[in-house]
Image 1 (cartoon, rainbow, N blue to C red):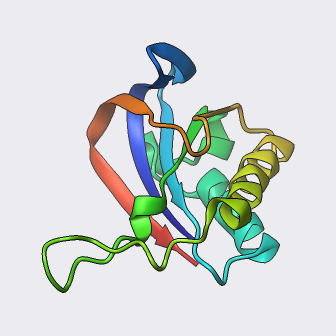
Image 2: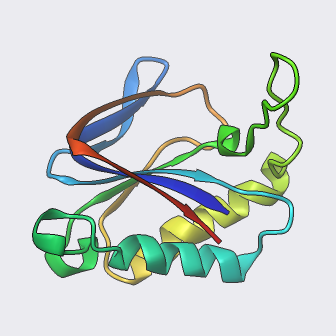
Length: 141
């Protein structure tokens, strides 16, 4: 499982022109990708890591300050482009395997006390964000 975590001042995700998830307060925008070997242990690890990662101001975590989290599914985190000019997505798990794990990460964050907004799994989404400093980190388990 891979996640790109960005510290943002605000963020939103839209599908067909309608906003489906948004952060109005500073928080985290998370792009989440799932591979074939991932399961519930990886989903739980990722949720715990996102919730407690000290990447906000004054080295605080989302759990420390109650910062909201917007989670967007992103199979392209497993894109491979070493050969040729077209990326391959072979390492990304199919939707039938990755959607339940995406939901498990979101649900686990919520169970831990996070305010979680989501994109729409598998949809063509438009993501807009205002980064809080150039702060982006890649997590992988």
